Amino acid sequence: MATQTDLHDTLSLSDLNNYVSEHKETLRIDWQFNDWNTVLTGVSSLMKTKDGLDILIKMNKNGTKQSYDLIFDDRSPDYQKYYQLQWIAKMDMIIQAVIFVNGNQPLPDELQDWNPTFGLEWQEKAKRLITSKENGWDSNPFWMKTYNKYFLTHTLFIEEWKDISMHI
Image (cartoon, rainbow, N blue to C red; front, side, top):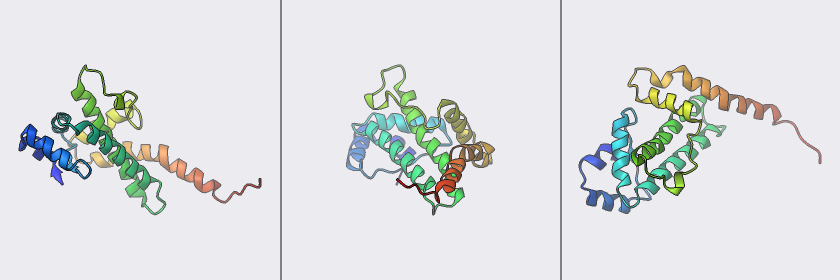
């Protein structure tokens, strides 16, 4: 797994482009989400490569899908489900960084309709917590409130209706 700083600190643009192209299907990056400027630098570096935007969008979509799969997996412990909210926020930070780096230029078609998973206000609060470097950011009540609001009630609703059968 490449560290994020390896990508933009040690490789020339040509080498980075070659590395990304060779590993575009398997590229995994150890993102330093607690430092927004480092995320911006990493995203900016990848955006300069031929496949960078596609990889960043794929990371967001696949990471978010994997989190949802864990949230709705009955075998996943509640704590793992709860933790996925933080991961979804981090995946959305990647796209936030793409948009930020893009500046006042038109967005690529793939991002025209993009919005943070739980809305802009939620995402901004999540990003502030993640980048705060504050001890205990990951146990802030914000995460539990979101989990309870979006997922715990949904799960309880499903449990209530499991035993009901319909005759058609």
